[in-house]
Image (cartoon, rainbow, N blue to C red; front, side):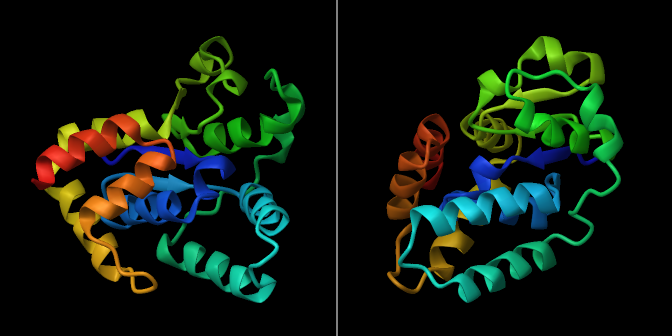
Amino acid sequence: MVPIVVYDACVLYPAPLRDLLVRIAAAGIVRARWTDEILDECFRAILQQRTDLDADALTRTRELLVQAIPESTVDSYDSLIPKLQLPDLDDRHVLAAAITCGAGAIVTMNLRDFPDNALSQYGITAVHPDNFVLELTDRYPDKITSIIAQQSSALRRPSMSRFQLLEILEKCGLKQSSHSLRELCS
């Protein structure tokens, strides 16, 4: 059975990481989920940080993201939010979505905001994207290296080799998995 994971806004923020995570889901390795609220948070942050980007282009990016993973958007989780306890109350919607869709993991860079004692009662763990990709690379080395090759060959402005892409992904926080993938791609 393909595991269900919720992608937090922080892992969808960097375009190279977002592209990789979506490609992993599109390949059927995991079933990725998010909410409109998660996407709002992500794209609002991108617009705030990257004033050079066009808002209409980002709207199109968001639409393509949703189209790339059919049935990715989780709804009807709002009633759970008030009952949940997390260090940052603004993150309760992510946990509520994970519970609603039956996710086994929340992929996030903010592990402190999703402590084990708050998630374990729901059978959910928080996992850093580096550990997530590393585990998938260990399980599916051929699939993940193929995804990296596809992602690098799709890049046009600028074009990038697999190794250049892995350098970028390392800067996005994928240190261990980028190292492992470099070895596999050699």
